[in-house]
Structures are given as C-alpha cells and as structure tokens.
Length: 111
Length: 113
Figure 1: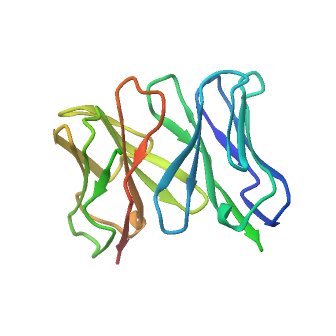
Figure 2 (figure 1 turned 90 degrees about the vertical axis):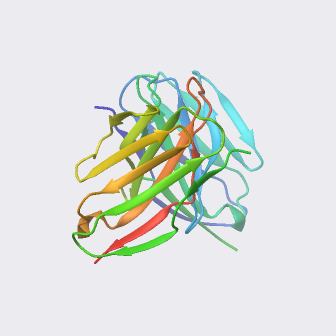
C-alpha cells in the first residue's frame, strides 16, 4: 500500500527565512504533485514532477524529486507572508491517475 | 481555463437524509474524482470515474455512491447521511492521459447534524 508522508505537518516561520518541506513515499513512482490550499479555498496546482531529478521553480518556491530516495522537497526561499497556506504533496500510484495524498503541511509565515 | 464547479459551498443536513453533491466541469475531461478532506488526513479518494457510466471505488467508498450520466457531470450521493460524513468534499477532473494535474472545484463543506 502506497503511503505518503509529509514533514513537518505544521511550520511557523519568520519572513525572510528559508525552509524545506519534505514528502516521502513508500513505493516506486515517478510522478509527484505539489498543491497549495488557502484557508477555506480549494486546491491549486503548484508543480508536477515527472522524472527522477526533476526540479521546478516558481518565484520563491522550488520543488525537486528524487525517485531513488522516494523523496520530494518543496523549498521556500526568503519566505513572505503571502506564502502562508497548507501545502500538499501527492503521488500517482501505478499511473492510473489515482493520487495518494500526504496529510498536508500548514505553513504560517509571520511578518 | 478549466472550470470545475460544485453545486453548493455549504450544506447542512440531518442524519438519515439523502444528500446529493454535484460537480460539473467544462473542459471535456474524461476523469472525474470525488475526495473528502479532513484535518490531518489529507485528501482521501471516495470514487472516481473514467468515462460516462463508468466508476471505480476509491479508498473510502462506504456510505457513498456516484453517478456519471453525462461526461461533464459527476454526482456524489450519500444515501443516508451520518454525522461521520461531516467533511469537506472536493471534486476534481483531469484529461485521460494528462499527466499534468487535477483541477479542483471550490469544495462543499457538509455538516450532518
């Protein structure tokens, strides 16, 4: 059974700091997704990582995928308050378009 | 832009009532999904459909059924609502063969009293 674990589940940080959210998964997969959810809102796609070594960046967020380690990271550089949200990773199991989701990381960035 | 809409943002029902949640997407997507989201549990797949009249159980189908009579519309049905079905329900859709992303609706927050 595929499991997806995010770490940490809650993160409070100051503006301007760097931090990393980790997403570990338990079986082989080469498709990993990062989503953002603002309070009371639905999920918004951030990144899709489709191969080992994939790296994608947008603004202050950068995501990477290591399929051998079964690990994806979401790195936040010089955090700003607008990045406060809950971040989810999800893994595509067996390429059947069913996603297995992590529990989410609630990120609070204090001004 | 893909648009996924859900029939209600907030819903309050009583135990034992039959509840219909409807999802409509306007981009001709083959795949549609129903999830529930609960704090600390992430998203859990209830059912998905890969074509009209086709459905597959997800991880937690018990207490739910679905209907897909038209390609753009995917309904989630709670035959007899129970308090443990109080949750946020999210609908999503994606193209068959599209490895990019699932597009989500705004969610329906259901409270069962």
